[in-house]
Length: 309
Ligand code: GTP
Ligand code: MG
Image (cartoon, rainbow, N blue to C red; front, top):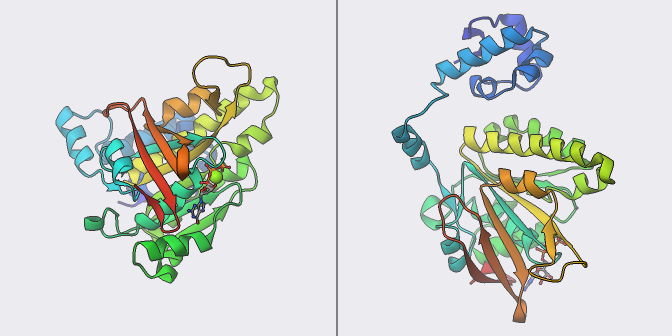
């Protein structure tokens, strides 16, 4: 269905909407009226009407339990490379969801992201989606050399695997948000099945320092997570984000760390996995508040070939 077929959208409005990144009825259906208002220079009530028409044409809005179940059936999983980690996650990283890996430096967050960018490309019967990866690198830690090793570890042609990872560097938090907000073209063109944001929070932490800026930061982060969630829903893709934890030296009991981004990130991630280093190069993954899986732990290793049991 073309934008022009929506009541209230003429050729000029459709053009403006497309220029602003609203290229499909799906994108309009999940937009906020204020966004459309700004993009197309139309009134708020006109924007609302267009959004409602888009939703109706896609039969969005209320769903019965059966319909939710049908949508869940289109959900797919990507293997992490470790059986025990997959098991902890109920089979792998889910599409239509945001999975957050948080942990200290060196806990393996970036390694897991690299592995998933390879594994999403595997055929479905080998735990992949047969699709490409979009890798948003905020800390300049994406390493093609590492992808080559991991591709070889799965027996694939490293060149082909690298060809199907689209890497974008984000230079600050606004740039990061923009890259995700403009990602729809790439998602469609390149058949993206996984979006990685490594790290989700580092730019936000350095761009918004000081207590006075905390609410601004949380608001922006909230919007960013919302955009990611929308993309995962519309395109049935997996979103994986990383988050470093801060040490809390004044903490005497329990775990002396706290993920950056606090409640906003925590509440908008569907799955949260806490990674920590253990003996002999082992890593421990702990699943924290998942909607449908029991809490638990898994042990995996980072090897030359990638993530393994
Ligand atoms: P920050 O981004 O600093 O918060 O850390 P991170 O959680 O992203 O850590 P990362 O995934 O970069 O883990 C780095 C660790 O992975 C190293 O300290 C190594 O233990 C391990 N590692 C990285 N590359 C290799 C490799 O080629 N072979 C092996 N065996 N281990 C590796
Ligand atoms: Mg890292």
